[in-house]
Image (cartoon, rainbow, N blue to C red; front, side, top):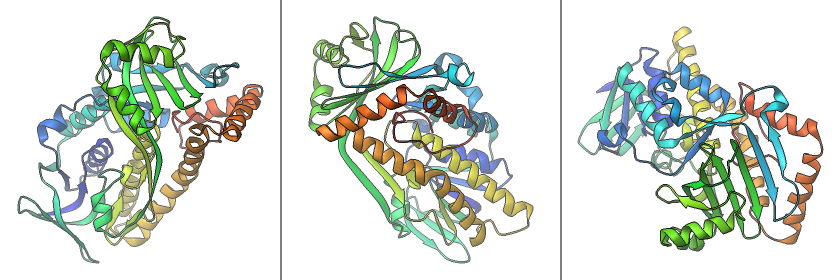
Length: 404
């Protein structure tokens, strides 16, 4: 079977890309190892994604946004950044830039479901689910896949969108900078007594990093960064003991806290591919840039890759050129590198600084927050990055969870 474009990976970015390319009236194939039923009804996985205004715009353009119930969209009206047990938090408010909100939180499973529903409604994409690519071959003439069910697919362009640990990327001989931070995150929903006022927290304590992502006045996603051994111990605690420990870890600032969901653990591993393109192929989503897990960065940059790759393919159509044209793919790579590399390196530096407990690191982040909290132009600059309809790099004192 021959297609214009074959996409491997039906995560949120892969689904959104299939939807974007189908809108160009192309023959698109989507290959995914999960069964179709799992794509149609994704399970809750603990991840709450902070979406920028740019990402919301793209999701509206691709018809994803209307499939997310309003009750599942949670505004971010401000952010508080704390260091240790004392001192005033740095406050970043949407009021600084005259907007009602900095962004919104939406659960990852709802984003996945919305992408699936939009793709199903639009049609035009051939699904190959419950299978995986056994062999991949690219040549100047075509990209070819042999699937585990015996099917053979050929296309003018192959796109890998199959996670930060992409097997397709590896099969194509592209190495990546995989950075293991040596920590893990435990994420779950917690109900709490004190109103969170739609404020997101980033709290750099000694031996731990905590985040609080508001999902309603008395409901939030708790994100606890610890060693892998400690996160596993927390995840295994009986519910009453878990509630008591999390309440204590958040220093009782939100009153008593009670578990409201399943608990999930994610390792802190980032990935940045050495190349984003090659002969008849391109990387998108986490396969190109896999940011800090359970943060906004991954999907916001994933959507940026979708928009850039769609525009590249559209340019090929308008100019009557091959959609696998090396010069056009090289332009996609330049644009996506320019839009991701500064943020990727800044985030790595942030996580390294804010998850280390040596006295110099604690002093440096405390000093950075102290200076930032007393300079309104700096806080206004951070808020402006969040509400603008574009991707932007951040400075080292920006909270790691905040949208790009």
